[in-house]
Image 1: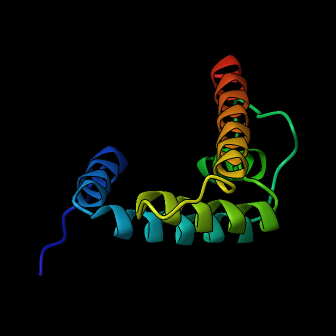
Image 2: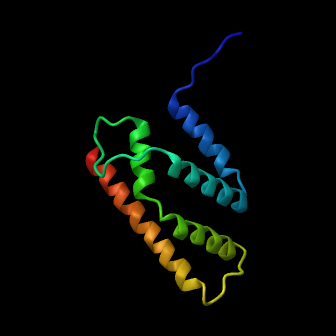
Length: 117
């Protein structure tokens, strides 16, 4: 049997195309499971080494772009309610604050990575 090597870029494109086909509910479930998997990985220091392996860069991103576990759980519960249009007026400010925190975390991580590489 012949085997064919695929470049990592092709593998990533294939994964992205598959993810794009998920329904909003399936995407939420995937994102939650992906984030849980990320939290299990070994974390690296605050600064990203330009010579870091892919695994180290991913660990840096995970460490610095995730909410604490209790806030993460709350975020996903509120996000599902928002998607289902069952989010109450009382829950909306908390959801907005968690989204704001995630946005800030992701912005900081992107800045650090882009500045390093």
